[in-house]
Image (tube, rainbow, N blue to C red; front, side):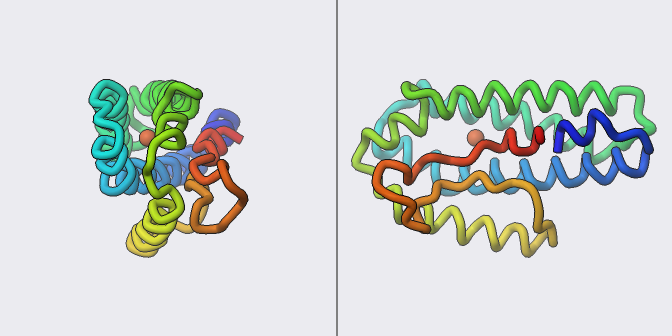
Length: 162
Ligand SMILES: [Fe+2]
């Protein structure tokens, strides 16, 4: 979606894409903060990675708020989208590297299958609320039994880049 945004020409299209990017990222941050992050912290006691991820979410959410409360007319609209994209890219890289949150979660005794199901359920709930169907398929595949060891293999929200 970020990629589409970059190549979009009309203000309407940009505004529409920005809305979709923001609501997809809101779902992502909410389900992680409600379900995955607390479970991670409890299982690993790893405050360092956990807190850093929280702060990254906070930064992203601040930008999302600003993007949502302004619009393509705003002077800083495109700059915000572009910085948001960089932040998300960085965040996902951190989460997904082997020493990152998902890697450590896989090495812990967390019940990733159950968590995956919870995340999926909450995601559907939130999507229903925002009436936003598309975009962010960034869930642990745990609920869908895609084979051992792949439970926390979250699909990247960088799909938002394509
Ligand atoms: Fe995250």
